[in-house]
Length: 300
Image (cartoon, rainbow, N blue to C red; front, side, top):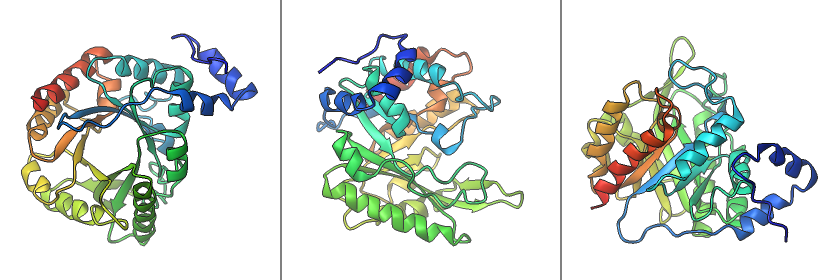
């Protein structure tokens, strides 16, 4: 079998391989050196990169920050190469590029499953499963699947999203793969934008619904925001939880929130994307190192 792992600057070869030998993606997945989820209580540091698949390209005041694929891959490879980074969460196209580039060796990899609720669309809350399914996650040797589960009691599309997420949780559990559920209590604003309610009551309500999805919760993890009342949110569940990063306007305040929440029972680490990949000073390595230090300190 030909080794198609590419050099750091081998982006031109990505298109060539995709056009002439697309089967090499499956070959790269099959020979990837995997790792196990920690069994000793250590926290995880996961980089998130599934935003572009939902049309969410902006970071703070840069509306097209994530539009350049080569730039994104550079940032991801820098992040994945930093000490303390355990893996990545991404859509199929991004994970496949990283597989061909040899950037996922010894890393955890989670596939993003529902990206159909495009940012700003009239159907944003209808989060169709347009990405990975459980069978492909298993076949590609990934460690689990992530699904966004926004719950708007005023939008009829919510029940379809709930049902689809429930099926995905069950399908992943049958394969003993992690189902990473990201729940929000949401509502469409008068101007049309969808807003997630981050009050403690809304977060508890969202967690309560999400943790009951599927035929078993044995392999379900939660992906939830770090809010000031995090103790109240974590008191609502016995499931493991990872803290999401979002696009915070104040990264120092976000670090403080993560540090405090990481010490709570049940919190198992961070899943952060834009905040670390596109810091205000563009020093990806320093931003990732800072977050990894918080995770490492909480694991002691």
